[in-house]
Every structure is written in C-alpha cells, then in structure tokens.
Amino acid sequence: MIDIKTAAYRRASFALCLGSFLIFCNLYLFQPMLPMMADTFSASATQVNWLVAASTFALALTLVPWAVWSERVGRREVMLISLAMVPVIGSLMVMADSLLTLSLARALMGAALAGFAAVAVAYMAEEFTPRALMLAVGGYISANSLGGIIGRISGGFLSEQFGWQGAALVMAVFSLLVAILVYFLLPKQAHFTPSTGQLRQQTLSVFHHLRNPVLRIAMLIGGVNFALFVNLYTVMGFRLVAEPYSVPVSWASMIFLCYLSGTLSAKLSGRWTQHFRTIPGMVLGTVVSAVGMWVAALESIAAIVVGLLLISSGAFFTHSLAYGWVSQRAKSAKAKATATALYLVHYYAGGSLGGFYLIYCWQHYGWHGVIAGGSVLYLILLLLCFMLAKQSNQTPTGNELPIN
Image 1 (cartoon, one colour):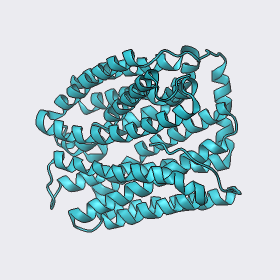
Image 2: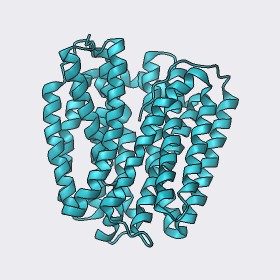
Image 3: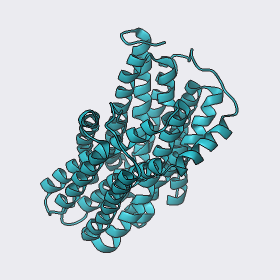
C-alpha cells in the first residue's frame, strides 16, 4: 500500500491532483464566455447555456457507467482513457462551425471527463493506506476547486485575447501535456481485483437508494443547491458585461475567485459535524447563500463580490454536509460507492438544468426576476431540509469528508 512520505505517494498524489485540476478546468472553461458566445452565434442566453449544461449533464449521466466499467478493467486504465480523450475532443471543438455542433462536442467532453471523476477516489481507496488516503483525498478535492477557478478565469482571459477557438486550443494542448504526465507518474494498481456481474449489482443498488427517502431527499438537496450556486455565477456574468457595468469578459471572469470562500467553508463543515447536527448545518448554509443572493441585488460591484462570497460559502457548506450524509447513511462499501455516485449525478444534473431556469428568469425579467426565481429554489431547499429532518432520527456523527 502507498503510504505518506514516500516517493510513490508523492508521485501518485501529484498525478491525481493534476488530473483533477485538468478535469474541472475543461468542465467550466466556457462558463465565463457565455455572454461572448451569445454574440458570436447570435443566440440567446438560454441557447448558449448548453455549452455548460451539455457537459455537466453528460458527466452526470456517465459517472455510474464509468464506475461500473472500472470494476472490470481497472481504475488506472479508466482514468488514463478518460484523460486521453480530453485533448482529442478539445481539438475537435475548435473545428465546430455552429452552436449545435459545439454543444454536442461539449457533451462528449463531459462524458470523457466523467471517467476520471468517477474512479479517482476508488483508486486511492484501494492503493493508499488509510492515513495516506485522507491526505490524498484532501489534495484531490482542493485540486477540484482550484481547477474550476482557473478554468473559468483562463476561459475569460484567453477568449478575450484569442477568441473562443484559441481558448479551446490552448486548453487542448495543456490537456495533452497533463495526460502524458499522469500516464508516467501514476503508479500501476497493485491491489485491484477485477470483478464481474457488477452491472446487475449496481443497478439493484441504484434502485435501493432511490427508494430510500432519506438518501433521496439528501440527493435532491445537493442538486437544488448546486443549481443555485453555479448558475447564479452564470447569470452574474451576463449582468456584469451588460449595462450599467459593461465589464470586459476577462475581468468579469475574476468573480470566480469568490469560490475560494467556499473551499474554506467546505473544510469548516467537517468541524461543524464534530459539535453540531448535520441538518441544521444544511439550513445554515442555505440561509447564508440566500442572504448572499439578496446582498448581490444591490447595484454595487462591492455588494456583488460580497454576495458571491456568501453564496459560495453557504453553498459549499451545504454541499459538503449533504454529500457526507449520503455517504454515511449507505451501509456497505459497495453501497457507499453507488450512493455517492448517485449524489454526484443529482449534483451535476441540478447544475445543468438549473441554468435554464435562472437564465430564463434573467432573459425575461432581469435581475429582479433572478432574485424571485432564486428565492423559490431557496425555499424549496429549506423545505427539503425540513423533510429530511422529519424522515430521519439523526444523531451526532463523526467527521464527514467534504468534496467539491
């Protein structure tokens, strides 16, 4: 087993962090470009939202199939295949001549990215010692967050300098270099045993989890929470490049630095569970995030930044607690893997579908419409927390692992 303070640990953890960073760079590269893409293709905000929604939705749909396939061929092989597909699809995107073609390429990209995201933690669980696992997963999660931030910011700056094709091409070249590095750095698996018959077992687990009201409600909380979080940022990008702010796309992309407050609050969620109950923590995170949306309603750049910091803090806090809840409520190791994969399906599907709802509010009713539409979703979140409390006799739990 790979232990801390060894060369194998340094190589493996660095390779996994690189892969994680790359996945989220590619997933969110186009988010800050959406206002520019609407002008480029003479399309509405709802139509260009497919450039983000297609990738996140495809990722959500393919997480479980990748995980099941990895039971046969191995985690490392799946991760390397996933990373190898990324620069190829990225290069194909540059040749897209219509919004539909580009959206389909983005869907292929999401499906490719899902391979690495689905099995990286499983690789660590099988190859690392328990104490090395905790450190490695912590680094992996930080790389998730950092990759999402850098991908969005680089998308904004690169597209303004070189156009969207230039941004996609730079990311494709970077993806190729990272894929090569991971291939040489990531150790071969020594503790993986191929298994068969997983499809039936995993399918039964999926239906079992979906029939469990406690898990089902927690998954819905994750989906609605992410629908609000990621798409309030998307709408804010449209708001900043429009009058009266008229901020360039490159500078508007800097708002994604506000994600860092969420990285901090995700870590604090673990301490919360040591002293308090989980569901009140979800309520607290929801309230903080909702307050952030209302603060951002003020006509001031400073208020928008403060609002986004609060939105990020509250949303990541709620997400971390909900994810940990799902993981702990599943009984066996195999059940935990399926339950957490299902949570991520809800999480990314919510982020994908929520964009169409909030962007519709923005297009037809402006920022006040977004406030009204967002408030409805926040009320639904609070209702789901109440339903979760009614369905479960919760007792204080130990440490819960936050994940981005």
